[in-house]
Length: 161
Image (cartoon, rainbow, N blue to C red; front, top):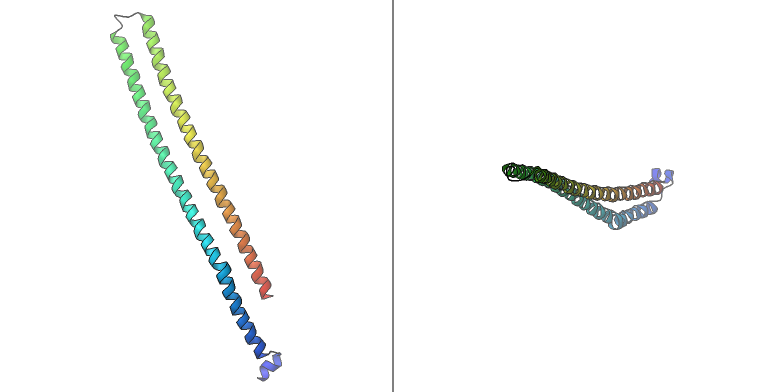
């Protein structure tokens, strides 16, 4: 007792402060800790969803590249077939018709390449836009969380002082 009196502490006030501190911890835990955990879980789900969308976009890009190769091979095969037919009909037709056929084949092949290239660029642009949107959303969330964590740390330091 003499030590407590010597330090100038009042037991009743000390117990009241402990009770108040316990109530404060409960209130902070109930009103701040749980919502922050909920927010972090939602953020985690959004990031997982973004990663899944990105992986799906990658799979689509791989599929499109495979289709592009297939279409180019088919276009090349069709071009070869047209040229072979032109050579078979060479005896029956004039050289002008053969040249027109070659030009048509090259034009078809070029249009096919252009169309595939345009589709590829469009998909890549869409993927970049989605990835950019996901990065912006994730950055905003990280900055929001950092700000709230900083505020929490400052409030803890002030309460300790």
